[in-house]
Image 1 (cartoon, one colour):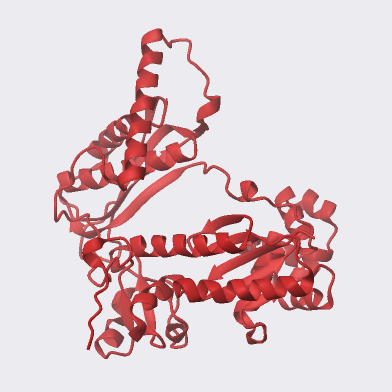
Image 2: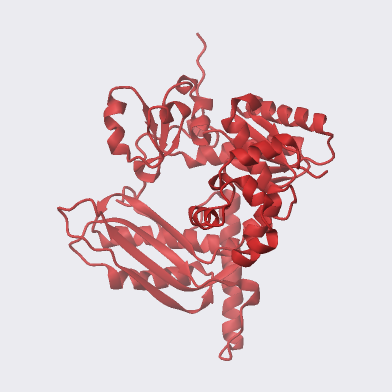
Length: 428
């Protein structure tokens, strides 16, 4: 039987920090969002104190000063490298690995007898921890949705010891499906939970037993597939999950409030370039560019202004230069002096598949040549940045110390990717 495993790293950001700082093991630790705004990752010890995801960092500063908790700035370069190391270990133990997020990977585990499969999953569980220092939980089942539930059982029920293998139709599987609420099922959001409850469907087991055709008629083919997956029938592929986005937004809070148009323009330029890179990665073209700015709504002592403006592009494009030109036009139109801005961003709208764009009747050999030069230039830029690091080749040079730069006062060293930040070992 074809089996699929889901390997989920436990408290991944915190675990990455603990690999290089063992003193943090057992302590309440949180990792903050960009610009140290709020807590986005929590250790089990921090959760036990009643602190939840998204808690503003400033509300916890008294606990930091008392030494009761530790808050660290996000260190995405480190987390990305550690994720790649986990992936490399999984590739040694599985014929195929499908990354789902920075801390979750699906793995193919075909051809094992049940007893051997459980032993292999446990070996995988131990090897990732041994080779990378990252603790993981492993859930295995015939479908991705059921593997997600198996992983949840492995993580929340101590009896499993971090590894759960579910066979379709078994007593164990039926028991867990009855135990888990609909909201625990992958892809079933709050609104669906409310609508399904009106039909008497309140648990994962209820959804698994529902008539798939009725589910499809009243909801969608996606929910029908989810119901079938809960029965152990694999009908969701990664391509179904990783569809091209219909819009791309890149935004970030500024390191401090600013009204400097030149600094804000630099931020929008960085966001626009990053958005264009994402656009090319998924093979899309944008028809319009939207730019927005926001003041701090919690600063009631300051005047408030949160404008946005979309600018239509002359033609669908993924050229960073054209996108930045349109973003610059929008920014000039919406920016007003006298306001202190906290956040800004660029959104690429009305996306189309680059391989299916229609040629205009106004196109000429000259415009076609320009399009080809644009594509070649963008390919060269992306190739250089991929080979030598993001930002190696960019349009415009940001000013050092500008207000929009990230604030990360408590970021740890990028131990595994920067020579100058390698951990130091001292012999006693």
